[in-house]
Image (cartoon, rainbow, N blue to C red; front, side):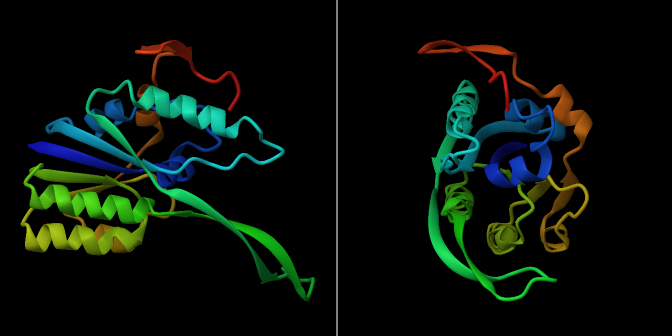
Length: 205
């Protein structure tokens, strides 16, 4: 079947690759490995550019290098949300008492962008089956609409093996967890080339 893949980038990162050696992930290979009987029509990757912290100043450069690697995949497009930082007052954790002001950073827009294009592509008949890589239960409603209103199957590939979303499992046509063995075999080559020249996997991550 002709498949479109919609990747919740931060959910994939924090659920499957953070703290592992598998951050240089070839998502096209991942899609083919997980859906060997489908033809991948397009891949849409949803993310936001991070705001580097003082203790991790190269964070943004590493992210941009990874996005550059993703863009070597011919049928992949990147769709950006944004980050908002603001000061909030929160309770201190026990055994302490009282409140503290903290800087809270939130990613905004990526889930809405994903839901919008999942629906729009479905209405345009751009795919026969949709694959959503996420564990975010907020995406259950657009998945339900594609299934019930457009009569198209939607599969969910969850990056969270330990705590997969029960809501998404119930809503999706099919549900799979992304396993370490698949991540291990789906890594980009250490050095890649694009229209701007050659570049390499970050030496530290």
